[in-house]
Structures are given as C-alpha cells and as structure tokens.
Image 1 (tube, helix red, strand yellow):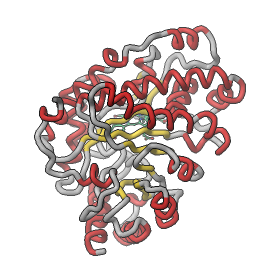
Image 2 (tube, helix red, strand yellow; image 1 turned 90 degrees about the horizontal axis):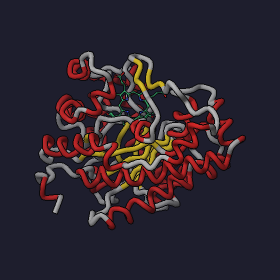
Image 3 (cartoon, protein in one colour; image 1 turned 180 degrees about the vertical axis):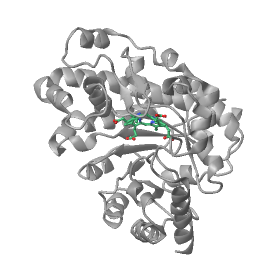
Image 4 (cartoon, protein in one colour; image 1 turned 60 degrees about the vertical axis):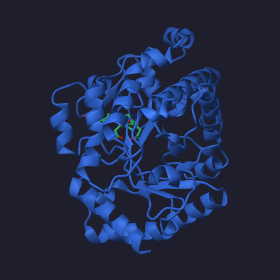
Length: 366
Ligand code: 1CP
C-alpha cells in the first residue's frame, strides 16, 4: 500500500548489493556526506540551530539531497539528515549542538540516580516524539523521485549510552567505563531500553520510506572484545533479529540492515554471525582479509578508506582505491564503497569527487 507512494527506482545498486546480488560496479556513498565540507550546507543551514534543521523536514530533505546533486553519477544513496542523538532527546535528555564543538548534554547521567530512574520509567512514544524524522524521510523520498535509495539510521545502544553518560564526545570514557564496570546491571537495563526504542524508531523510518538502515556503533572500539560481547553485541544482534519481525507486524517488507562498529576489528567475525546483511569496515581492516571472512559468512562489506586520504594527492588516493577494489573482489559483488568513517569538515569536495571517480574507474575496468 505504501510503496506505490514513491516513484520507481532508477538506481538500486545499493539495495541489490546489500542483498548479495551481482552488479556492474560497486554502489558508492559516504558517511556524513551531507555536512560541513560542502559550501552549500552552510548556505542552507545559515544561522539555524543544528537540531532545528533536523526538525524541519524541508531543510532536512534539502541537506540530504545536496551531495547527490553535488556529485552527479557518483553517489548511489542518500542518508537522511539527522543525528544519532535524537534518541536520547526522545528519551527525555536535553542535547544541544555547540557550533564548531559538537553535541553537549547539559545534564549527563553520571550515575544511576534520579535521572536514570526517571528515564527508565519514561514510556517513550517513538512514533510521536520522532515524527519529524519520518516526515523528513517521506518528503526526501518524494523529492528524490527514485534517483537513489534513502538510508535510515540510528546510533547503537552502547554508543548512545556513552553519549548519555559522558555528556558529549570523549577521549577517556571515564563515565561510560564507570557505568559498565561499576553498575553493570543498570547499564544493561539502559541498553535494553535503548535497544527497544532503536527497533521501533528504525521500523517507523521504514514505514515512512527508508529503504535500508544503518546502525552506527561509533564507540565500539572503546570496548574490549569481552566487554563488547556483554555491552554491545547482544543489543546489536537483537536489533537485527527484532526489526524484521516488527516490520512484518506492521505489514511492511523487510529491508537490508548495515552495522558499523568502528575501531573494533574483533567485531567483524562476531557480526558475521548475526542477522545483518552488511558489515561496515573502518580502515583498521585490510580489505582482502576482511572480504574473505565476510564472503565465507555470506555477508556484504562496506568501507573502508581512511578519510584522511582526502588530505593527500591523486597518487596516494589511487593507490588506496586500487588496493580496495582488488581486496574487495573487484567490486561487482559483496562490496559497498564508502570511507572507513565520516568525511571531515577539512576535506575538499574535489578530493571526494576524485576518490569516487577512481573507484568507479578502477572497478569498471576490473
Ligand atoms: O550525511 C550524513 O551522514 C548526515 C547525517 C548525520 C549522521 C548519519 C549526522 C549529521 N550525524 C550522523 C551520525 C552521528 N552523529 C554519529 C555516527 C557517525 C559517526 O561516528 O560519525 C555520531 C557519533 C554523531 C554525534 C555527533 N553529531 C558528533 C560527534 C561528536 C563527538 O565528538 O563525539 C558531531 C560533531 C555531530 C554534529 C553533526 N551531526 C551531523 C552533522 C552534519 C553535524 C555537524 C553539525 C554542524 O556543526 O553543522
């Protein structure tokens, strides 16, 4: 009933690759592709507050589409303009975006105190409280007119816990580590609650028009393999098994699922034993090695160049691309081209353009 609201897809490379199909060249997109490195981002955003942009479907959809227009024929997916921290906001925590600094929680949850009890008792209406995201997704699908698929996303429970207790980005993870090692049961309660919200949030994004979803575990690498197995992996796996069931109960076809656990090479084999279709790789992975492991498990990989190569030159970029295309099996099956993490504000759009052109050139020739 819902799918016919949108125009047919002209480019479904990403969706077909994520399902394991053969394609003529790898689909390409870039984490954080809508953002501060693009001059038109600053123009559209103006002096508006970051979260104000997320809550305005017109602005959010325009920002989402900017990279597709900026790099014609080189970007095969859009990712909805939003942030992983909208979930803590929906759970009742205040988050502000400080210009040039990043997200800040004025009242982080330092211990399992009154705030923790309040948040655990708070029944979050995910459909209502994040309605602006679903509206932005539907509007973006309409504006895209089938040019490329639209990716929905959320933060992983462990990464969201880190932000909620640290109050922002962190180098030491003093508070997050205190939580998991001093208050393991309360940590698990919070992770479980967040997991259930993530599942419903992703399901509603799909109802609104998201065609594939990605879960960002940006701080997976702060955990040991043993702690990852306790405080991250079970929740990531739960999302991947429960989301298809929730979609079925909503009368919605399932969508491919991507998981990205940054800084955690030990996570690859573990995530190959999960219900995810695609495993995101950062640049700690050697392409050929990771591809071999994923192929054996029937999984697709995504990645993985160091975003820092964009500060280099043509020769250094081509060398990295050649190694990736070779390592990832030539690029016609099982690989979604991306960077190994988000593009930074320091990257030049022309450097990204060259990176994408080179992937297309080398993979088409192979
Ligand atoms: O094209 C896109 O990808 C835009 C949508 C998007 C996504 C997928 C944004 C917009 N944020 C995210 C995800 C996100 N947000 C992650 C996971 C990906 C990753 O690891 O990079 C994380 C960790 C955040 C949290 C966040 N939001 C940070 C990092 C803070 C830190 O030091 O730990 C920052 C700087 C933001 C702000 C933000 N989010 C998005 C944009 C464009 C910006 C910059 C805002 C601005 O100043 O204009």
